[in-house]
Image (cartoon, rainbow, N blue to C red; front, side, top):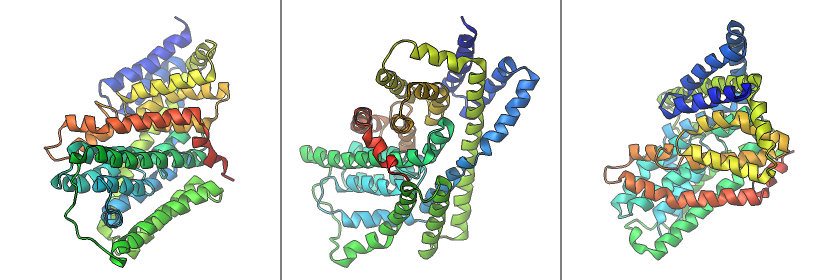
Length: 439
């Protein structure tokens, strides 16, 4: 076996094995990096370089949006504004088959526009809306499916901490990557709503025909929407508008969004000291975990490159005479396969050091590739048996909702996500049209 082949097996195979047996992501790559630095970067000198690289990897200014995006979602959930947003949407949507399931999708889309955490969106909607839907006679699959599915869409619609992480680790423009996920995310949301309505019309027993709810009329019907939903959406409009117009960097947009969210909470008298403390603690915990992962990912890529494994693998793949489209399709299938077993951050850390040199050598549009990468990670959140949002739903769902219900509930939404991935593959403009408008 060649030298680079042995290095590839040691680094990629070792990290994958440790992840599969359940070792935490940060510790997995720390262990592999120490061994790799000692073997391929000169013993003690390699370990010293490992320490220097670790510090520089998290000192990058491009990572600043991550805690700010997370803070936006933490304030939204801890302040109770999320409950008001749900009420505003619920009053507005009337006489629709599977109404509460549709409300969950629309509310989740709104939360995606201000929250950087997929888990938080799913946990919050699951704890608030799932018991209500079950008590009104919704089938468990119809009640749980939309909540998990729209939680995954949170990854595509900015602000998204994982999108910033992907851009930082891959070298893809973070601004264009954030904006590139907007249209695919909205397409999925609309598809989910149409599926729910069509499914309930075909099988009316899945949802109650008439819900015993007061019929709000006039201003009372629109008041919560105008008071809570529109101001929340305006933050999304400012953030994405500034990104798309090229008026602000991702860091500046994240700062504007976090500040606007805090101002909104203050205006509603919902930002107490306790809420602010909980929000900052949650932000610090999640951001710290992500930064530890970045340390491991950056050094991992450097060792792969230094050992010759990256260039060797790239030459081996590109030398097969396959078309760029076929190679990209193979990479997407690899990501979907990994999504069954490992989490999204691990997917990035294992594949990006190999995939990005291939993308660059073949002249593939990095934004197009990055958006498809995001869709594959979004799929991974929903794929049985270890999808992160499936486990989140199991944690907040009542005992009457079994894992069988949860697995069956996500099947149609996984299918729609696969169709979206195919559409973006064949029609790249779905992902690249809006980023191309950035000034």
